[in-house]
Image 1 (cartoon, rainbow, N blue to C red):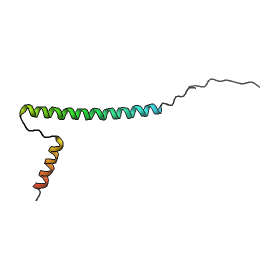
Image 2: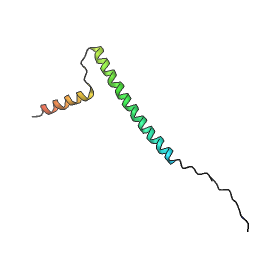
Image 3: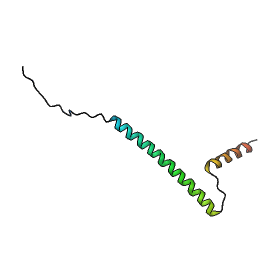
Length: 76
């Protein structure tokens, strides 16, 4: 009886799906944090500019609440 040994093509198979999923989740979380940071810096700059200009500053959420209140009071 003779044994034939044939080298397999790509004999070492690496399952890198977990690493790819981790990297995708990491980049999604990183991009979300970058968006939050950009938004925070923009709000900070608006606030500082309003102080510099001597104008009253309202945060975007406060402004939205006032606009909603204005619209509900304006309706007959």
